[in-house]
Image 1: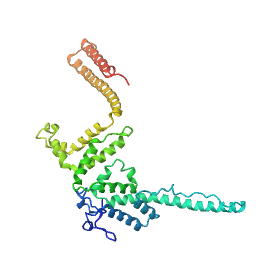
Image 2 (image 1 turned 60 degrees about the horizontal axis):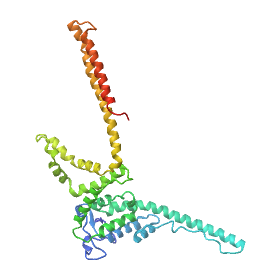
Image 3 (image 1 turned 135 degrees about the vertical axis):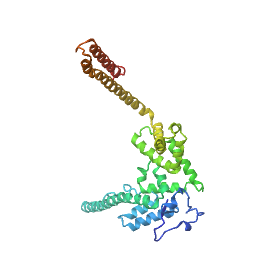
Image 4 (image 1 turned 90 degrees about the vertical axis):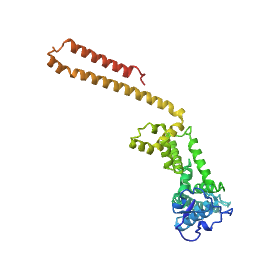
Length: 346
């Protein structure tokens, strides 16, 4: 995580000012593949967090102090826990007790409205702060790392939880070779990714593709194109067919993804469906194709009968057209049998 190197103002920290041997401001050179080119300088998590807080305080958003407190505490304010309670009257005399109760209700109502107002602004501010973090404070490589998380579109919509996750990424290792660990983890997560037993296919596909993008970024397009050249399918393409060879290399990443997606789907759930679809689809294809093909042949034969009668001066109902008609009926019935009778109905 870093911040814009072009920004100014109080609290701005450049990489040179950060002491790498300080326990509180350890700079992790993680995700350094292209950080130097995306306009965001690396900094410690603490400095980046202060930058986010500075943005909140200067933005003029309402009830901003609640967001600042939540970020500093590392957890969102629980507005239900701090919601006001209606106090019972302490007076014993009936008249004064009733007056006190009325005052308590007025005070309770005002505090409840304020609590609800703060809660509503807090939820609105969450979206604004999350967008600011992702657009202004996160390097390109960290962005890819975060989007590879399975809960990126759910839990990490909360900016406080997002910052905690970023902090964990930045502080989980002091190893200077962290890039290699990141590369290993990305591969491990991608190849071990399985569809959950209750996870729908669309959600798994989105999760699978997010992690695939991380892998493609780490390997680079050239690696996959080189891999394509080593495959048997590529070798089977004629050496003179350069267009087909180039297309094969262009499509290799999609082929790898398709293979991995099919392998990692929950096949205990999808196998019966695929088998049923395949059976029914093949039955209809065999039925329609067989009948249409055979009927076309027969019609072609019968279509030649008129000219033949004229050329050879044959009678309309001679032996030869009878044979043609019989052949047509036989082929038609055979086609119906092959198309419908040889496979079970659904």
